[in-house]
Image 1 (cartoon, rainbow, N blue to C red):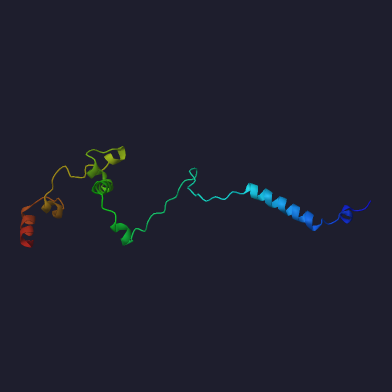
Image 2 (image 1 turned 180 degrees about the vertical axis):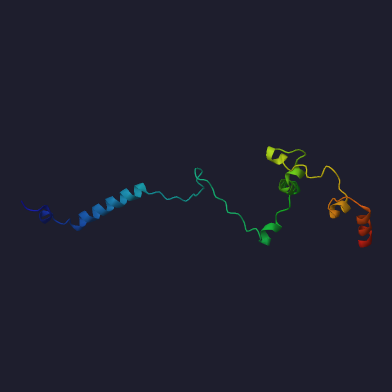
Length: 126
């Protein structure tokens, strides 16, 4: 049995041109030229923030007082934002003011009993 490749003859140039034309027609049928471009609604859009230190971007935007007040209020500590603690962990240390007012001389004296000798020493040091 003879091999098939040896018996197969090369097509003539007319037949090659017909095959090429048929291939081009099939390719052109499947191709579309897209000239209108848009954002894919199924894909999320990742916005790129502007440079924070660029002066020319910040000149055009006026400062929004309501937004700035909201940001500054959010930055405050909880004791200044709320009148009462909001969570149980905030209850610890919420009241930081001492219940009994201490005299400044008592703080430096170390809460020792005032004797006539120590009173004289305090007056002598002043």
